[in-house]
Image (cartoon, rainbow, N blue to C red; front, top):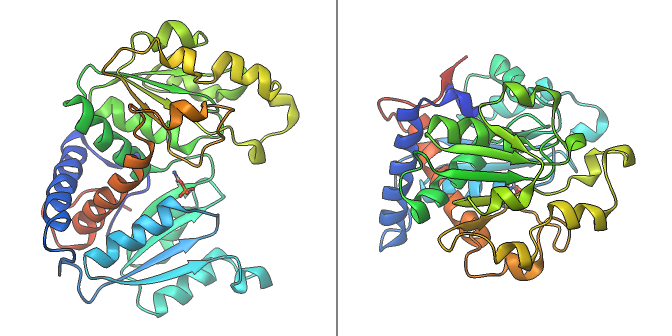
Length: 310
Ligand code: CP
């Protein structure tokens, strides 16, 4: 079985195939045909151990638009609260006939364990601070719609990189697609391994913004940090927030992105989030097309199949 657990599982050809397929599916399902028969008879399980709005709902919408049956599992209210393990939960769901499992889990690496235990395809919907590959795909799809080919494009990712699975997956995928990524963050919110990532690092947001084709603001993940990591909210916003003043210095063609959920007024000003060049709401819609493409290319018998064997 093939899985999508890391953005590294995608070659450049794989990634372009997902983006092209998503475009085609958006074209087809956005017109008269709302529902395609492609995954009829298959069951997709959404296995969510952490909260989610966008990812869970868009995977559900994507699977349903391809005519798959969908089972939504949320750890809250399940036998996980009685101490049932991830393995026993997974085996229980597989016994009910899961052809693919979309997993979100607080532990980095949990999807790899899952792939050892079940026969279905595993899709990582966010694991701890590790990766969120379908978010990176929908971000690349959104950038490509606005900027064309990503080869040589300058993408700036700003904020709490340390806790961000979105940042890591984006750096990996965007570099595969030929973009030049720069991370901007306080030194305390960068992982020690960042020197090995295929990107540049800067501490001067203003100088980087002026040369950016897209700027992606990251949520400050207060729930994953202790006070020592973090300056005051005011200090953080002043140095690393995308204010209306900073927005006015972006190149005219540049887009403003955020994976959501946002802390308005912390990493991004409300008027910037709602501005004409913000793609934040569009990103959510694009997530459905991209996740349809991933499900189709992993489960639908398409050749070549994307992802990695485990
Ligand atoms: N971007 C993202 O993963 O959002 P959710 O946590 O709402 O799924």
